[in-house]
Image (tube, rainbow, N blue to C red; front, top):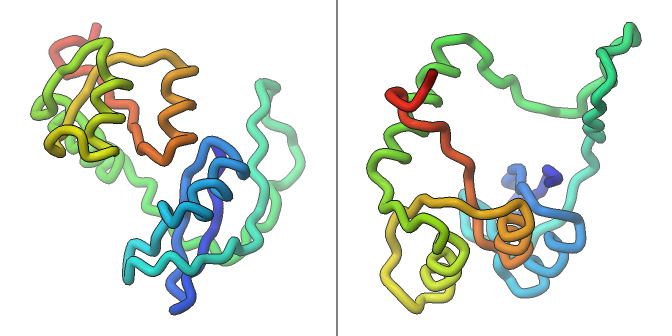
Length: 147
């Protein structure tokens, strides 16, 4: 998964999450990526600082300088509110179980009515959905399922 900094022809800046750079290019070529503000599909990538995830302990070197990144609230209250919203989404979405990839595609391609769904999929199935421009989001378990 990569996060790209994007800008439309009306100078609206936003982030896009893609399975890979080639997935972004493919989706952009098919006009599947649009500005969330004005819906323009005339987009360009902006330079962005790389993010490298390692399994080693944090080094003592200072973090790389960030380039024009907006401030992100990181308070526990914001995290709790986000978790509550995600749990609400999980409770209200239709559980399609292992049919998640199939149902997500049917909704995406207009073969069935649009609705919120949840279910299970393998990492490979999720990557394939993202490559097709189908947005999926992992949801936390309901509070009563926590140990």
